[in-house]
Length: 290
Image (spheres, rainbow, N blue to C red):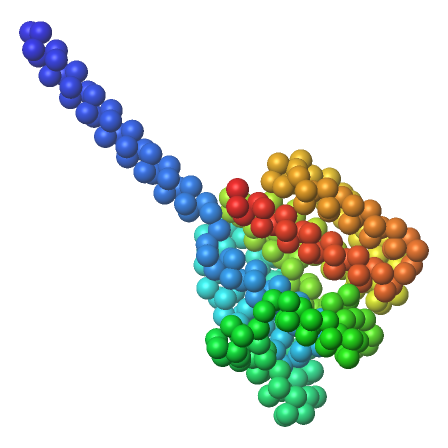
């Protein structure tokens, strides 16, 4: 009888162990399914690139990237659908993507064939051979870059604010590219993502301050600035946990951006918004490393 109890105990123990193992595997599989698919990261990267490209008025390059966004969107959509994305969110994104694509096709058609070819070429530094790169020291590269900036002030201005001197017609295209960013938070909310959705909303809003100030629509800029403060307040605590320095830098950057908006200084709004975007990217990296 005693031996029977021992056998029963062993059987129950084995059954419990197997069940717990299966449950653990199911939980791990479920957690994996909750994470954003790899296509989401690629999709976000492309949207960032098209924004930067349109700001620099690289219309042909922007059009190429927009086509890539369309392809990546088709890959991403089934995952979003499985997570229950609303029809309104889908339709809104597709509409904004179509507006951008149409605007870029129109701008690219205006370009001379030579300029389109120049845009499609890889940067000069990518064409250098490994032998040439090894011969250059970092000090020499820095010196060369500074010398080029002195010779070409336009390059220096692009680093401050790529949209300095942009026309209202060109601004319409940049605006269309930035509108793609407003959809990222809606997509991120469907998953258990490492970066809180409000961080991406903050990024979109900061870009918008530069756009609306360039349009001279200061009432809209004021409204966006208020939204920035409200959005940032919802994620400050998490930001502090992810990277205290980045959180402090964003605090200060937002304050400085608000000051120049109140001063109605359009050029400094461009500078301050770009610096704020850089720090937001730093915070995004910190969240992703957690």
